[in-house]
Length: 77
Image 1 (cartoon, rainbow, N blue to C red):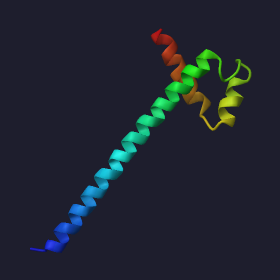
Image 2: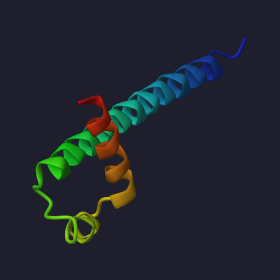
Image 3: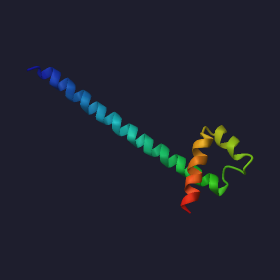
Image 4: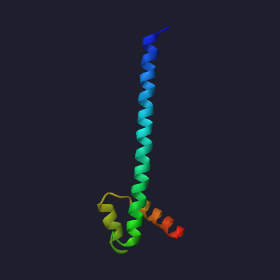
């Protein structure tokens, strides 16, 4: 009935699919970054027990999130 409306709705739907795809890939990248940083933490690359929290926080990471993942990874060994 309204061809222009159908075209508009198709464009909106295609646009939303693109944004969802970006959000999923961003989430996956973030999870990979957390895991990589947690592995580095376990290897001592972020400092010793006294400095690791400060170093991660200064670099913009959530220390508790990284520590949780590191504990998870330690349990898998």
